[in-house]
Image (cartoon, rainbow, N blue to C red; front, side, top):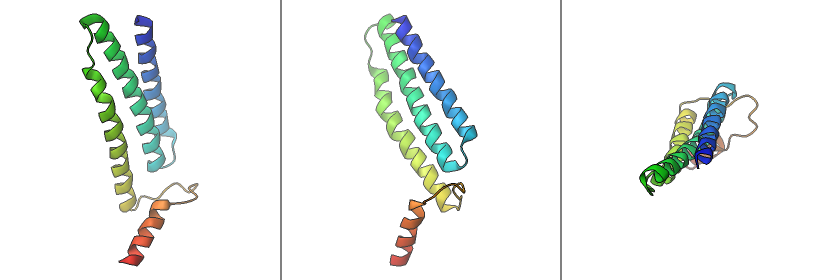
Length: 114
């Protein structure tokens, strides 16, 4: 059980490090948000699973930590969406390599209808 807990902790740590590298290496705020959100969500789930296994073996069966997982999935994706939408509305441009901006097309359609 200790080996499984250690592996989960290492996976979580590796995902957090990769998310940090994505934050540094990606060209614009939208790509950075995606890299960080995906990696940190995975890292959090791995850490929560490790904590659940650890406390289940030491203090008896406790599944309260598992309730964190759905909240992390919901809040990280919703938070990322809100930040990206706010960045787009304030005029933050995507990287020059970006081929298509669906949100700009949607906003253009909305502005024509008003």
